[in-house]
Length: 152
Image (cartoon, rainbow, N blue to C red):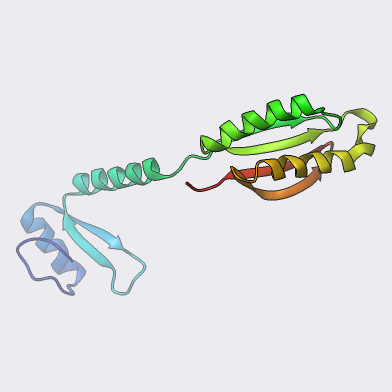
């Protein structure tokens, strides 16, 4: 137990409750899973406020990952490829992940080799801006690959 006006140590539940009542504050259980449980003599409302504040701070520090998608066809020509590559470079420089995928319509699925080559070429040309998180993977009618930005 931690508080003011008494020695920290091991107290029985009755003693701890009496100390808390004498000070006009609450007895809050901090770590219930240890033996004996750890309690603190504090104002409960203040304790809840501080916990919410800590949670909010942790949430604010957590990095938010943004995923941008770039869609190709199996027969994408060089101009379109370069145009989309430049967009991907901008996304990676901004710190976003890029999900590039080749969408196969109808019977285009027979060209899955071309789709894989296209995505590998895409990853190769973006090598200095980001690295491939996963290699091209066929999921239904889409072959996709994820690129993550390199650390600055």
